[in-house]
Length: 237
Image 1 (cartoon, rainbow, N blue to C red):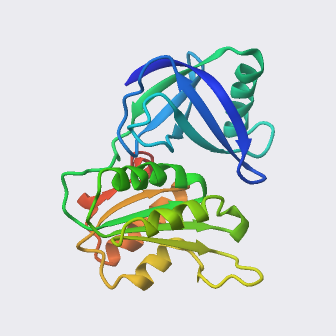
Image 2: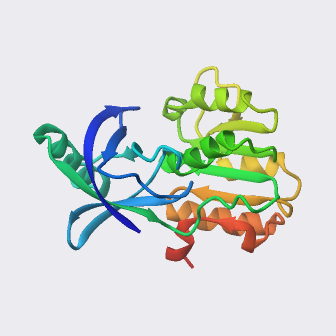
């Protein structure tokens, strides 16, 4: 783990409830794709957020914070960052946390699965895979409740178009209007598309209750527990 001071360069809305935060650390940030950082509000108050930027972006850290409700865990962190932005002061970060980072020494095809703002965890890995020229099949599934929450849909479609081995599959739980893509729960879309998950390495991020259900269903669908990764596993049975 690395402790850094960082300028808050910008806070901008991605949707009504999701904000992109750009931080400039005072030294090169050392982390692996899929790791997270902690925003230090006080000595015993640290808020964890996945890093959306790729590891080569050592001098710029991007976070996606889903925040609603004045007293929520994420909104309090966002207000803390806004104060630093307004005052021109630096936030304190702990960088390089987590054990579910991308394993590049594995030759298995990849399933990257994100629910909501769990997207930021998967985005870091997807961008890193493109940067290093990965030639393994990569299937990126992003599940949201409504289509307007797909704030990076065009960006990820461009990512998929950059490599014939990359596939991006957005999944909308409650489609409205003219949505023509996958519908329902994101992990059920994975199981519908892939006959058996046994050959895959699987990386997942989302609400803890969601990840627990996904893990169990994926194992029944052939996935091997030793090739499934999610930091949520440390907090669920």
